[in-house]
Length: 116
Image (cartoon, rainbow, N blue to C red; front, side, top):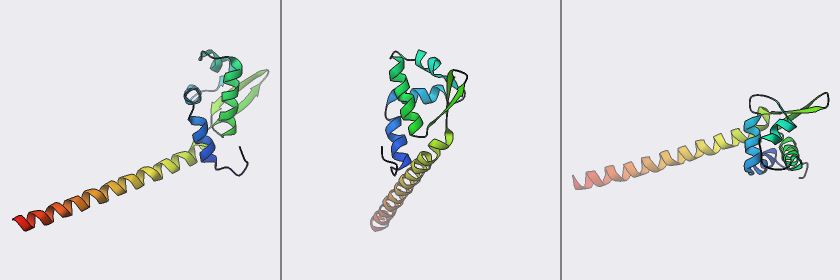
């Protein structure tokens, strides 16, 4: 992962793995300890730790120490740029669909006038 890499690319790559999406859902509203997160999955703790690291490096998780425990929580601002990009794509798709419908309607109106 290069330092000049687009944060949206890092977030998309991190979210491509189903367990990472599940981890984000687990910590969406409350912080959880690494052990609590690991208990939710049928994989080793080191595997969960690796997923947590990828999510942290992608800017999607926060990590906080409380004594000997590490608590993880979702970082909503990490998803903000990704959401903005998806919103732009959605708006563009809707606009394109609107133009297609309007063009089809114009063709249908022209055909109706010619036959009517």
